[in-house]
Length: 213
Image (cartoon, rainbow, N blue to C red; front, side, top):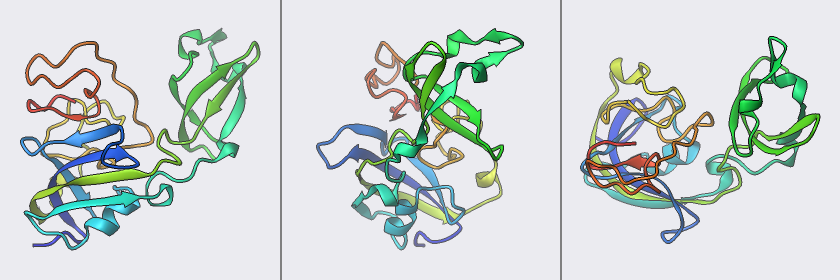
């Protein structure tokens, strides 16, 4: 069986910025591969294109342009939001207002969008609604471990925190987005994983041998 529409593939992979020597932003090793669902618009476009037709046992590596992944960086998505937008029941939610915090908000059409706090003034907050990887070139490498047809269970939410990071979700299921998600947040760890030794700087960016994420 080959990867095509409505297939599910267990994949060991690395995603790095720019090239093989770049910063690693996500990985899943062969002892704990990630299940990716193809053909339901859950993956970034480049994954669908470059992995289509691959079979179990195949290795791969490819580069993704911003247009093929998380889009070009748009200056118009950096906006000033009045502090009144963060007032709930008459109280300013100051605990939300710190640099790099990600906050989900509603746009003018009622859609949920996630933005990062980049500057705070006395009466407004500058928010960046670009994805954190917008404008970045990505290098993806790995191998296909197994392929099968998609089941109904694959299409159900896999649990976790709902941010797309995969925490508390089973290793043989996919996040709502497959790899990464515009709603993702940062998990902060100070120590290596006590079970598998996954280093602190990579915890929250992929899977260790014990499935930590």
